[in-house]
Length: 344
Image (cartoon, rainbow, N blue to C red; front, side, top):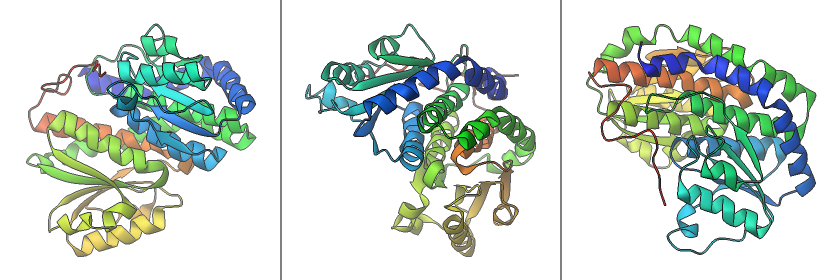
């Protein structure tokens, strides 16, 4: 097995450990957020971690009523003009914790009096040291360049912090089931490898999601770009209708992330329009009727919508890995990439 395949398979155990080992830390941070009562939230991140930030935008917005934005780290480093974050909750997210621009946002915010939290897989990293509070992912070494278990661990931490902040029994109970949802997803994804050969010569695609799974469209697109060198573009289902849908012609591949939840009716409507255009739709869903609208489907277990991004990305990871393999690429060492990317 490749490192990537092993790391995808490790995700239920990584998430299970995280829920146990960081439960008290999450409760403490949730209480600190309630006490601070931030006016807004800013997420500092790059790459895959940006997509965890996109999840936080929806989760903290919907469940906690907080306005969440992604920071522009270059304002703090290249331009040296930090924005006023004194009344913000500022969360820095990074697998390695090494990026200077992400660290600088958190450091500037802390100096201004903001409440700062870092989420990394390296508790001794500069980013981890810069924040008042730190949540270590505890995912173990990720040897494959493409992030998988660290990404779903980041999403899990965002879910833990939100649950601790809101502190509703229903959310706590649902979150405790997350490792099992991921195990079920892995079991349901066993057939993906058998049909991936069809896409050996794929050179472009679109990925679509909405709401909680807007981040999933971005992350699946990123994994396919990294591993398969395919030109991909990710969109909200709503944005896609505002012009980009014009690129669709017969046979155009479209990955649609559409689990049961609030956006499902609009995604189904778009899937029907894509079928009329003879697009080649690959559907990720736990709804039978929605899966039937795709040429191929990647199944999810029934689960709460707010947790579905942690599971919905897994079939995308597996598809990207298998596509890279049938294309003859090294899935653990994509060309031109390194595990740690430091930006300033």
